[in-house]
Amino acid sequence: MTDRFGQRLAGAFDAHGQLCVGIDPHGFLLQSWNLPDDASGLREFGLRVVEAAAGRVGVVKPQVAFFERHGSAGYRALEEVLAAARASDLLIIADAKRGDVGSTVEAYAQSWFTDGSALEVDALTMNAYPGVASLDAPVALAHSAGKGIFILAATSNPEAYELQHSTLVSGPSAGRTVAASIVDAVAGINASARSESGGLGSIGVVLGATVDLSGYGIDLARMAEGAAMPILAPGFGHQGAHYSELGDLYGAARGQVIVSASRSILSAGPTGVADAIRSQAKEVAQWRG
Image 1 (cartoon, rainbow, N blue to C red):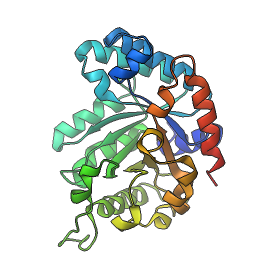
Image 2: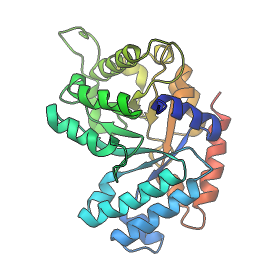
Image 3: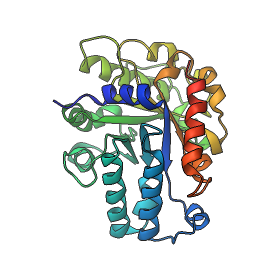
Image 4: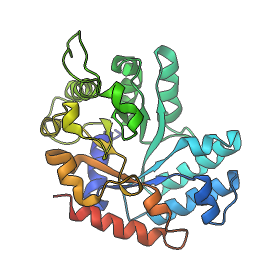
């Protein structure tokens, strides 16, 4: 039987720490790596990052958009990168931010969660703008397939503040911010999925490291209880958050945070990326607590 995603994530944390390396082939990074901004460059870039990450971290996060912009050839490159990451025993979070309703959102999940699919990953970022319940089918598929989902809650882009900080005026989450209501809903999903206590759940949230989470009414201590909620945390490195702030930012939940960094690592170039991963993984471990 396939282990739950939460179990595999906890194992990756124990073996390699909490750093997650983004695979983000920006055009300027491809240029600095002396690679063409085409499918062949994407493939070479991704494979080099996977090679550098293997054995040094447990999780990688390819940003699907940078592959998608090159159409079918970009997707073929992504498929090769995913295959290499799977062969290297890396957990893969596809940063695709899918979201919709009904059979459409279920089809998105099937694309990324089906065993043997060329796009198969361990977890997927998803958007709950149509409501967290709109993701019921992907959540069910994730649980049955041993996969994970990270639902956007409090993201690090400043444009999100007005919507995500808004307060609900009706329903069971009245008085809670939109971001906090998403966290509450995910906590309920994890609690319903598991009868035993402890360990990491398989459904998590995205909580940016540059966000004042207390201002959103998010109780980090509560997130660490029971089936602890995994947190995907962008915003470290280039975006301004420091690894030394891990405890201050996430408090009691810091041990369940996937510390995501991309440009601060990738800018080291093809000859320096492995050393950058190694040194930054050690730095994150220093502040895990």
